[in-house]
Each structure stands twice: as C-alpha cells, then as structure tokens.
Amino acid sequence: MHLTGTHKFNASTDKIWSKLMDVNTLERITPGVSKLEEIGTDQYKAIAEVKMGPVSGSFSGNLNVLDKQEPRSFVLNIKQNSKIGNVAADVKIELQPLSEHETQLSFDGKANMSGLLARTGQRVMSGVANTLSKQFFKALEEELANSTSQEV
Image (tube, rainbow, N blue to C red; front, side):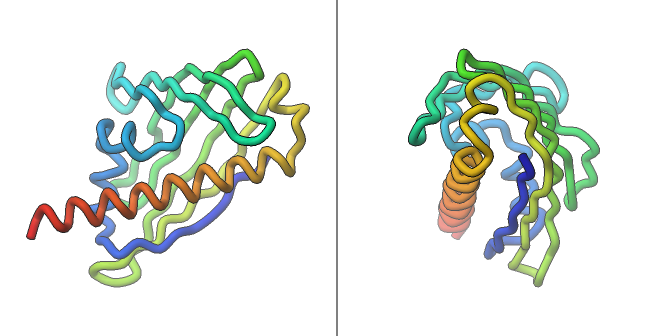
C-alpha cells in the first residue's frame, strides 16, 4: 500500500523537527499509540491500539528513525505485529520551509501488510491510513500551538 500526503504547518522547520524527534511528544500525538519507549539511539518500541471500522487490533513492534538529514528529512522504518496481521513500512518524511514561520511536511512510503490486514482490502486500509494521518497532523498542530502559547 502506498502512503503519501502533505500538510502545511504555521511553525518553523526547526520547531517541527524538534517535536518529531521528541519521544514524549510523539507518544502523545500519534493516534493509537499507548506506549513509545526509547530502546536505543533513534530506536523505539511501540505499542498501539487501532480501532477503525473493520480494523481493530493491538500492535507491538519497533520504530526506527533512519537517514536523518536535520532539519529536513528522515525515514521512519516501522515493524508492527498483531493477531490480525503484521505491518512493515518505510516512510520518508520531508520538511520544506515555505517561509520563516511556515513549513510543509510531506510523507511518501510503502507499507506491506500480512494476515487479515492484507485481506481487508487496499481501499479500506488506505482510508484507515488517511484518517490516522489526519489525526496525527491535527494533534501536531495542537502541540505546536500549545508550545507557542507557553513561550509567550
């Protein structure tokens, strides 16, 4: 399944980068994630619960941050396992400054699924991925707004 999208934020590239590299922030803003634990440099153990339509399951696995080009891009390498199937994905995240206080985040990657997840169908899974990415972007916007109001 191909994963792609963009979102514009009213924040600097550096500010967004620091939020994306902070394990506590990611644990708070990533949909479904109940625990994100650092196990090494740029290596994390993730536990997530996803419930959306016909897709429901507890996932456990690893998340690695690769090819960091601070503050412009990195690759998320994700391996998650559950009773309903497994997911392996590599997603490139790019931050492009539009102005001093505006940044466009784009992501592009591929997820391979097995088990019930794979049999559920590309359209259903694409819808789930789209919803989760929208929830993530909204939560990141709120996190950025909260940190800006605390700085004032």
